[in-house]
Amino acid sequence: MRLCVNHPAVLTIPITGQTFGVLLVAMALGRVRGSAVVLAYLAEGAAGLPVFAGGAAGIGVLAGPTGGYLIGFLLAAYLTGWLADHGWDRGYFKSAAAMLAGNVVLFGCGWPNCRSSYRPVPSWRWACIRLWWVGLSRSLSLP
Image: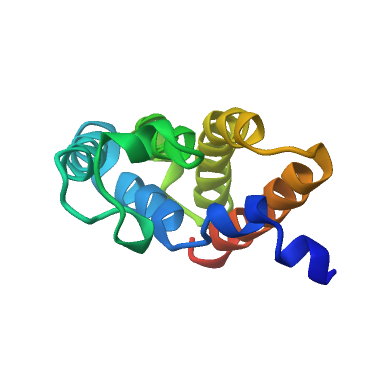
């Protein structure tokens, strides 16, 4: 287990509350305003404000191992906000399903970039399984 924890693929993709925050904002504000908030967040980070995980900033972060996740924030916010606009924010199971759908989009955007950044493949799988588990548990915790 120690070898997996110390592998760079596991340490470079941080576990933060950003994914949960993006989905929560989208559920609360809807498709248009939620996506606008996430777009403003990405623009702030790209402009050099230290808003990304670990105080990172700049265009280079969007091209790095976490860049796919950051772009996925916008798509996940759009989908989750659209579902909220159509009544999926009413009740636990619909809310959880909407947030899970957002997580699927978010990780679908993030994993290919993460995978291409790291070798060997087993460490990539470990990092993705760990991140997916955290995303799943957060999606089910709040609604």
